[in-house]
Image (tube, rainbow, N blue to C red; front, side, top):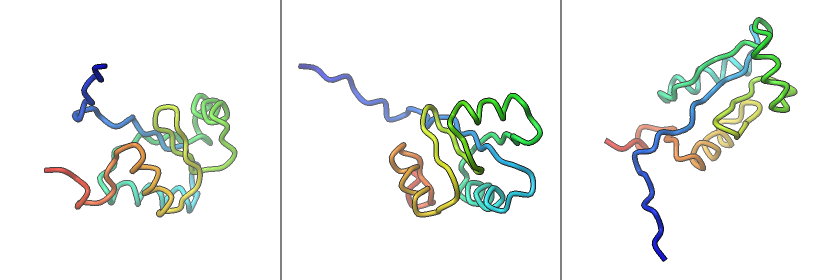
Length: 99
């Protein structure tokens, strides 16, 4: 049986950060992502009704909430975040990045 080749050039899923203004955990997560060169789009649910409805549809109850494709991650815990990103094949440190 032939197995289709894995696309090693596949891009990681788009990342969306749902946040609130003045949220300290949101600020820490935003800084963590930026310091690792991880691209994301931020949606402030306190200022954007569409983003708030999307946040609710995803089962969000607290911020920060990250969405990558159909996967979500709530809160800010660096060790859990590293594992979450690793499962998706997204490097979180320079030594994990391929030249």
